[in-house]
Image (cartoon, rainbow, N blue to C red; front, top):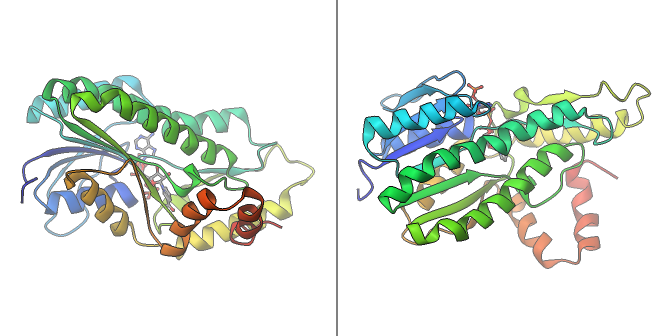
Length: 274
Ligand SMILES: NC(=O)c1ccc[n+]([C@@H]2O[C@H](COP(=O)([O-])OP(=O)(O)OC[C@H]3O[C@@H](n4cnc5c(N)ncnc54)[C@H](OP(=O)(O)O)[C@@H]3O)[C@@H](O)[C@H]2O)c1
């Protein structure tokens, strides 16, 4: 395999999509370091990669984690930024503290990792950066306004970054998973405290139940990992690629093609809102 021995740093590797990516790339011969706050290592039998404790919310942890990977292996060929979680709540009543915490991991966490790997990748004059975005980076999800906003921000960041680093041989790809069955659903933080009168209670309960059900019935994380491997090993990686169930992926094309009012009306039932 042409990519055997290449070095990948994957964040969010203790669970879900990040772990599936680490298992798959390691099985394909990549030298993988999987980072997370828990720092736990491989899940699958025979999978061989090393775990690293690295909280992406913490600038110095990211700097020292990335330096350690570069020092150990002499290069970093790929960054897969998968660390993330979701906050749910009415936009009006989600505390700014919770909303900012959401950005701290999902957006700034990716930024920290990108800034930390770029000097090494520029020196090599090659590298692949995969940012795990979401269909929520394209389509607004009611009662997940701050999760949506963190992924829209990531989409803009990745798109702009791609122009800047291309001349150094560095490619950036935004991978947009649909609903994927992982620990994401149980890790979701739900903010209802501010809504003491229950203004949004009924609508929110319904929308959150729909999203939790769809995630539980979602595609396996291994599908996203297969997409990530294709991106990393392709001669001409795409700027954006969706992953997961076909019907959900079609939503991205529908948003691009349909007049927005039509798209919105069609999307409402699947988003659990009237
Ligand atoms: N599941 C879905 O339906 C879905 C859909 C679209 C996009 N995504 C995106 O996919 C990514 C991975 O989510 P998942 O579904 O795999 O969820 P998951 O199973 O809950 O895994 C999340 C991973 O992120 C790590 N993490 C969270 N906060 C972190 C931090 N501050 N520093 C370092 N690691 C951190 C967690 O490990 P520790 O707790 O050990 O730190 C865990 O390894 C997220 O960016 C999510 O937004 C998920």
